[in-house]
Length: 442
Picture 1 (tube, helix red, strand yellow):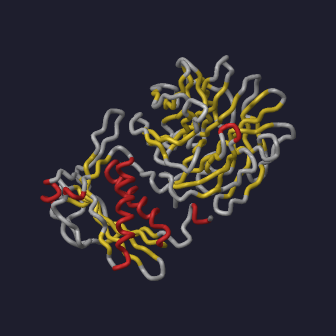
Picture 2: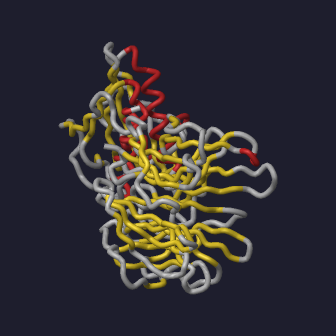
Picture 3: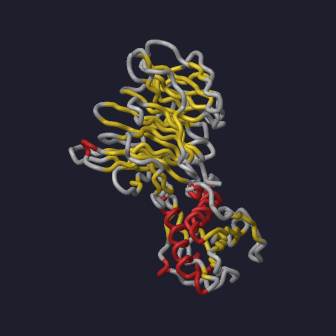
């Protein structure tokens, strides 16, 4: 299980000194805006197999890199049957005219080698075809053959970053609630998978109901709410060992909606007791608890800003469910949602510039985003039931739960770009809900 977030063998990243065209940043760049993006056409010849045993691995890695890029909606892969040139050696010079002829704006070439002791090496280059220049240094990744997917994701992250100027998000994982059984008697357990649905592992059994997982800033622990003891209580689970423990709370109280602070040392959550619900903070190491809100309103779903200075949460103190921001240490809160309908489940973007939320209005549910002061609200989705948003590590994509209407409707995971484009279903084995996206893996 330790390899869920770290490789049992080291994953090394090293810059190569490669004798190719002069290094240049070139003009190749996707400017990501809220408007419609024309996908950038790229060519990705199958990576060269550097030894006889590497052919299958080279094909798999090439396919996954292309799938990562195409899945963003920002890139379009040119079919290989349109290629004029072939790439038979990693060190061969690029025939730019052949790639220009098929309108490839970017070219990704690479090579894969395997060893008898179970290791694999992947190296690649990225070229701006029309500028006839390599973008950045060539890179090499090496690890166990079992980690080939991570290396492919890392290559795709590097390509994405160099072309968009933003950090990638492919080498990451998602914790979620996996369900089984009929709708009226479903059993749930925590699961973890690659961002694209591969490498599924279960972290808990299905003996008790689990809800709302959240991943620590380092990706090594998961907070979640469990009914294992009858009442909802917050648990913290070590991803590598799957060992878990209950966080301390007052007798007779119900704790829900936990979230880590950016330093990973504290938890903010909602505690209900005596018919009231307020926001609290707990120091994981000492168990020290501090109450952050006080009043007759129902206040829940806290999320801390990346700089640790503020908390956004939902409250009905105004008479309807709305979003508020307050200092991280408590104090006066400012309402930031003012549109029609009800707002809830706020989550701060890892960039710190936006807050994602769920909005319910006129019988429809929406995933939306707004600035941290409540301005520039935009609704990205609309359906019978959309909920539980979570951010990609680079703050570009939101994953969420969608459930369809009807007796056979089952929750599933979807993702959407913050521009509202590229709505996609995330493949899972059976019903899935409550996603929590990890940071990029080390």
